[in-house]
Structures are given as structure tokens and as C-alpha cells.
Image (cartoon, rainbow, N blue to C red; front, side, top):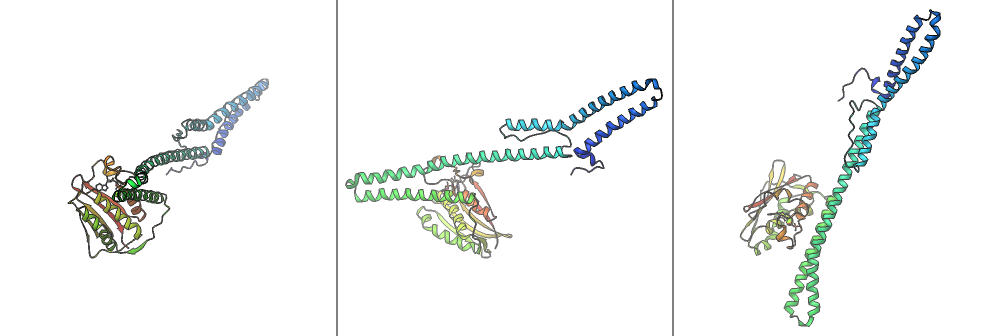
Length: 358
Ligand SMILES: Nc1ncnc2c1ncn2[C@@H]1O[C@H](COP(=O)(O)OP(=O)(O)OP(=O)(O)O)[C@@H](O)[C@H]1O
Ligand SMILES: [Mg+2]
């Protein structure tokens, strides 16, 4: 905090002006006293009066100029800082070098201008970033929509063109492929829609207390057949004393689905996936571990980024858009929880979600 002094009057523009004028009048008074001592020499009276008037006018003028210059110095600095801010395209905030700049009205004006320029520069930077992200998103979305759409169109046209020349078996296969691409499109559009709503804070979780261990077992059950087909061992381990959590059931189901889906996608046949729920202090911990390919050290910090795929080259056409973990993280944040990932390339990955107990 700025130390307060007894010279508070001097800390206002009005006070400074008054002090400066006081100095000027004291000086004029002193000159008049000296002059009055010589007044009795009558022959010099006229000469003295003339000198006194000229001297007083000149002194007052110079003093007024000095005072005016002193008082407007910071205003001139402020004006050139505003000009520099304008020529920078409003991107670099103003810097006005004035000591004790907050002490009087001009100081407060300068501080207010500096704060305003910082806000304007920050908001412009945010706008530019939002615009960049929007363009990136559009580019990614159009790429991801184009691939399944083109395949779907190709297979459907083939069914139409060949019509009678196609065996029943081939027709069925082509239509199945078209349906698969259609599902992929629907999923991508759903994920994009959900993520946009989550990021815009347009969804409010419908929280209620429920046993998350039961939900975990249900979701594991749902994936059991798929895991079996891929020769993966999928299991759930739930501790008996696990308390319920207060959360949105649908959203938590989505979190579990995303994490288990990832584990299955990135774990080769013969691997193991385990889903665990337990109490950790005053929180509930949910873990999805796999013995899969793991995530490289360089990629691990980015996996929660929207559209990030560590193996972009291979999987860009495999139907995954890189939205699952971004959605998952946003859901967990909405519940005031935390999500973290530990991984060792070639050894496996563990995602841990912490939620508050009900
Ligand atoms: N269990 C895991 N093992 C190895 N890598 C993983 C695992 N989970 C996620 N990743 C890496 O993190 C990236 C981002 O995951 P995310 O779930 O966001 O996207 P995705 O699975 O590629 O696509 P989507 O979930 O939208 O279908 C993945 O592409 C993958 O490279
Ligand atoms: Mg995923």
C-alpha cells in the first residue's frame, strides 16, 4: 500500500496549483518589502515602481509557465502513450513512465488509461485466439466429415449403378459399410455438438447421489462382448466401502465409456483393461488402466486437447476424431473433479478421475 504522508493536500492537482501560486506570491511579497524600504528616497520612487511592475509581471509569467509545464508534463506523456497504443493496433498495452503516478487526478487518469489499454489488448488477443480456434475447428470438422461422407456416397452409388449386377451378399455388404460410415458421422456430429455446448457452459449437470461403483460395473458389462471379440480381458474391481458420489449419471456414464473405449482401441489383442473404483480420503477415485501401447512422453501433455490424436497418421481415417478426452475433461471439471493420466510407452496407460463424495 502507498504510504500516507501529512502532505495530502499536495497530492491533488488543485493543491499543487495552490502551493505553486503561494510560492509566487511570497516571492512577490519579498520583492515588495525590499522595494518599500527604498520608497522614502523620493527621487527613486518612480524608477522603483516601474521596475517593480515589470519585474512582477515577468516573474509571474515565468512562474506560471514553469507551473503549467510541470503540471502538463504527464498529460503530454499520456497523450504520446495513447498515440503509441493506437499505432500498435491496440495490441501492446500503454506504458506511461511517471513517478508517484497514482497520487493526484492526472495520476489516476493515467492509471485508468493503462488498465483500459491492458483490458483492450487482452480482449483483442482472446478474440484473435478464438478466431484461430474457430478456423482450425472448421478445417478439422470439414476434413473429418468429408471422409465418411465420400465413402458412404461411393458405396450407395455403387449399389444404385450396379443394381441387378450385384449379388445379394455384395449389396448387403456395401449397405452395411454405408451404415457404418453413417454411424461414424452421427457420432462425430454428436461429439462436436456436446463439446461445443460444454465449452460454452450451456449444459448444467443434473447432479444426484448415486453409487458410481454400480455404474462402473454396468458400463464394463456393456463393453464385455466387444472386449471378448478383440481378445481383451476387461474387468471391474470395486471396493466394498466405496461411498456414492454426487454427479450427473449420464455424464459419468459418458466419461467411463470414453475411457474404456480408448483403452480398448489402444490395447492390442491379449491385453488387459481394468476399471477400479475406490475411496481415496474424502474423495472417490475412478481408474481405467490398460496394458496397451501407452502414450509418448511428448504427447501426454496434449491428450486432453480438442482434436488431439497422438497417432494422427494411422488413425485419422479410423473414425476417431480426438474429441473423447476433451469432452471427458470438461465433464469432470463441471463436477469440480480432476482427471490425470500416467503412461509408459509400450507398458500401458492409467486414467484417474477424482470426484467428491456425496
Ligand atoms: N488408453 C490410451 N492408450 C494410449 N493412447 C491413448 C489412450 N487414450 C487416449 N490416447 C491418446 O490420446 C488421444 C486422444 O484421445 P481422445 O479420446 O480424445 O480421442 P480419440 O480416441 O482419438 O477419438 P474420439 O475419442 O473422438 O473417438 C488418442 O488419439 C490417443 O492417441
Ligand atoms: Mg477416445
